[in-house]
Image 1: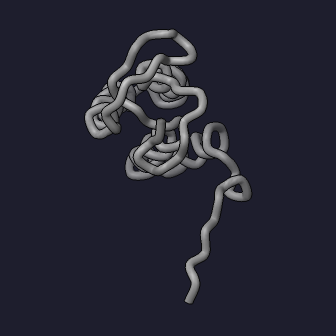
Image 2: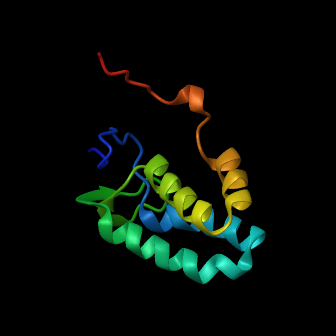
Image 3: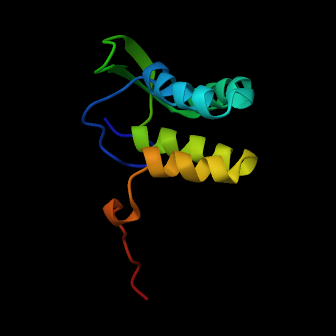
Length: 108
C-alpha cells in the first residue's frame, strides 16, 4: 500500500498511534497547543488516503493511510506556523535528516 506521497508503506501505523507519539511530545513541550494539535490531527485524518490497514503497533483496523514521514511533516508545518523554535526541536527529534531524503533532480 502507498501513501499519497507515493511512498510504499512497509509497516503501517494507524493515525491514532502516530498521533499519540507526537501528542505526548507536544504535551511535554507546549501544553497550550494540545487542543489545537488534536484539531490538526483530525484534519490530517480526514485528508489521508482511503484504504484498509492493520496497524503494526495496536493491531486495530484503520480506513485511512498515511506514512509516518508525511504525518510528522504536516505536524511540523503546523508547528512552524505557531511556534517556529518548537518546530525546529520537533524536526530534530522526529524528522529524518536531509541526507536521508531521496532527491530527484529534474533534467534541464
